[in-house]
Amino acid sequence: MLSRTADHLFWMSRYTERAENTARMLDVNYQTSLLPQSAAVAQVGWQGLLSISELLPSYAAKYGQDITPRNVMDFMVRDESNPSSIVSCLRAARENARAVRGALTTELWETQNATWLKLAGYLKSKDFERDPGAFFEWVKHRSHLSRGVAVGTMLQDEAFHFYRMGSFLERADNTARLLDVKFHAVQSDFFGAASAEDQEYDFYHWSAILRSVSGFEVYRKVYRDVITPERVAELLILRPDMPRSLAACMNEVVANLSVVANEVSGETQRRAGKLKADLQYARIDEILLTGLHAFLTQFLDRVNELGGRISQDFLVPVH
Image (cartoon, rainbow, N blue to C red; front, side):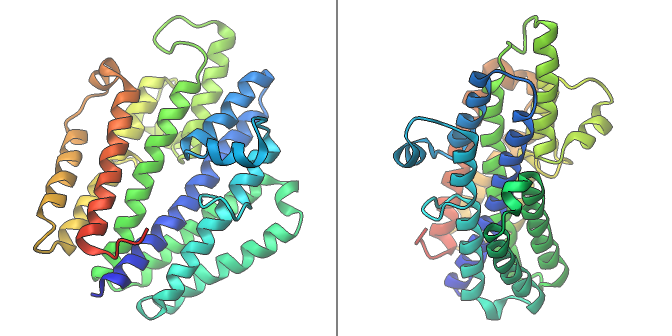
């Protein structure tokens, strides 16, 4: 297939997934902000959200050093100058879809187009301000719908595999960023003794993180015990049966990459396979012993390098 077509499909899925993940992170921060906590702790949460997306400098340039929930939400939802805002991501997804309209099924195009049109109406009304949680659920639902329509209607040819590859690369990147920032946001040392107040806060903190990746019920089913940071990390990094874990994402990337492999993609496949194997045979106690932050930072570097190599091997390198 034409590399330009593959490029548009790859980025259409990435932008849709990015909008969903932004909505998930905003939702968990919004829900956490409703809990009893000091202003300083609340600000750390909103600052962490900007750090996840590497947007602190852009935010500071527009709003200054004052980090408020209203400004962060406005910046991350409706600010068209922010390329990672929900409105920017959904517009980019729709533009990429429009560019390859002929490669999409009618149902998939109509889903992408309707999402963009409904978003404009949503933001013009005051529904978002009245109930941010409902808006974030709507964004997640539209992403689920787009992904489901693609799986249910697209021919499973190269176009489909580039679409899927984009989704899982983006998801791996976002899950790693969320874990990295949120583990650092906990006030008490999760390996040491914590006060009853800290333990209560930590329970809601970890519960919120699990809910942000649709993992709360999954955690209960897998571990059938209290929520601990070590198990949250294990679930979201190493469990291949958890859909948003790093291991599950890399399994999908490797599987889709093998289908579209060409004569120049051998090194890209090798690196993707090595990253998958490192996750497959890792143990959470070893990761925590050597340092979770170092592990996740290295993972993000490798995933971003992998995305660059995929663009170089298959796509039009314009992003």
